[in-house]
Amino acid sequence: MSAIESLRLHSPALIIAIPLLTAFIIPLLSKIIGPKARNGFVVAVLTGVLALVLLLAHDVITGGTRTYVLGGSTPLLTLPSGYQVPVRIMFVIDAMGVFMGIMCGVIALVAAIYSCMETYEGLYKFYTLLLLVTTGIFGLVFTGDLFNLFVFFEILSIASCGLVAFKIDSPMSMEGGFKYMVISDIGGLSLLVMIGLLYGQYDALNIGMLANRMDYGMIDIIALGLIVTALLMKSGSVPMHMWTPDAYGETPSSVTIMIVGASLSSLYALFRICFTLYGGFIGINVAGWIIVILALISILVGVTMAIPQTDFKRLIGYAAVAEIGFILLGLGAGLASLSGNSVDAYGIKAMEGSIFHIFNDALDIGLLFFVAAVVSYATGQRNLNNLCGLGRKMKYTTFLFIIGLAAVAGLPPMNGFASKFLIYESVFHLNPILAIIGILGSIMMLAIFVKAFSGAFLGPPVPELETYKKVPRSMLFAMSIVVAIIVFFGLFPDLIVDNLAHPAAQALVNHSEYISHAIRIGGV
Amino acid sequence: MLWNIPYIAVVALIVLGLYACMFKSNLVKIIIGTSLLEAGANLFLITLGYRKGGIAPIFTNAPSTESMVLPVPQALVLTSIVIGLAVTALLLSIVVMIYRHYGTIDAKKVRRLRG
Image 1 (cartoon, rainbow over the protein chains, first blue to last red):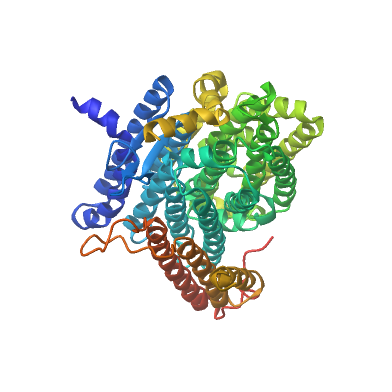
Image 2: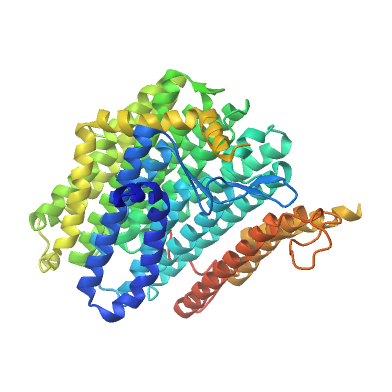
């Protein structure tokens, strides 16, 4: 077997194992080699992981769902009595999984490149946490087993909390970290109780096997309620959105994109559980409508709370709540139109838009946080009232902010337009009011960022801000990568929708295929 | 009724934990609340895994392999306990830092992030 073939065969395990091992090698390595070599090493490792993810994505898109069982050829364990149980750890990677995998690979690489300039003491710990978050997201999106979902959810929560509270000399950072961890912990424990409720009834943890055995009784509905609440809480949707600006605002800016990625991966878990596990449940449409209503409230609350903010990063944090609302709108619309193994044509469009918007949200919000970080790095200011006329000196940064502004507000040549337009035109068929509120939210989003833009970048030059620090090249390089992807997605949305988002939506809707795949491998 | 006592304890622990997380303003009490929630979830899994007459799956000197239980819930609880310990330690260390910065652990006074 050639090296490429064995890489292909074991890529799901390697994608998770490489960042995990690197995370713990970094502290040792940084005793031996200098900071530059260490940064180069992390970037090289993450580039390698991204290459593996793309290889896996190619395999999954062309060859169908991949199953990878650890420690055996099937997930079955034969007991001495002859009874067979599917207990082995397995990864089931379908089109939705690789879509999220590509997103995680890209944002981790960008965050690592951007962090090269950070000047914190003990930057190696920072990289350890960054790589652990990456591991958590990859594990969460690849696993085919509910308990591993819980384990990776907690790895993700603990490592992200470490990043949120990384600046231990800042009181606000501690406060944001505490809120983030309590919310994540309650979410994780609801997930554990839900696992207990399902395992007690069906003797299985494998998602495919559970979906096959489930008969949607009262206890299953309680479990669904628990898990939807937990995941909405972790993703920062409305009743529990107040941690979002606190945590996003206090995280070191180079990795805020990873915390956004962590929230988005819990939306992935929501997609997976609603569609694959509960896809055959008749009452799931009700859950879809509840999610749609929460999504609309998230959009409105996010934009209205963002308008009065004076802190640059908190403003973006509230905009991120509204962006989560747009993704949930598409998710809910897809769920509300689901019946059996198919959805209406507009339902599938809504899901494509929603899935595409997951990637776009990570890029757009991530880029805006990067710009806010560059501004606070160069001028030492985060308060919009104190910033003025930066566009005169920081021309490149201003240009990048305009791109981010257009993308997040959904203006045409950018990626945000491509995905939001898919969501609007599909939810319009469900109910026109949904599309109207969505577009209203988008317009207000434009207003927020135009306000931030005119406040910080336009206006006369201010003498206090004349002496600003030069922006390091690694920051500009990382932001340029993000902008290149944003513009590319905006110019060729069909390429992404047809090749990645559509198969992902199909894989979610067609849950019996996932189930039959998991069971065929299981041989039960 | 007697065999329901563990489940009643689970519900009591979870309700107490949620109450502490939501209504207490002392940060250490909030951490106690999360620990109670975790204990409730673990007790729930352990109770589910109990089978009357089942024996532990240790093959050495086992009387018979017929009534051995499959130790999945116990394995889950072990993992979950480790995770819970990590979370509690992390939260407590954050509270230590909060106390150093603010001089208080009252959530009503630790409020520099607003708006």
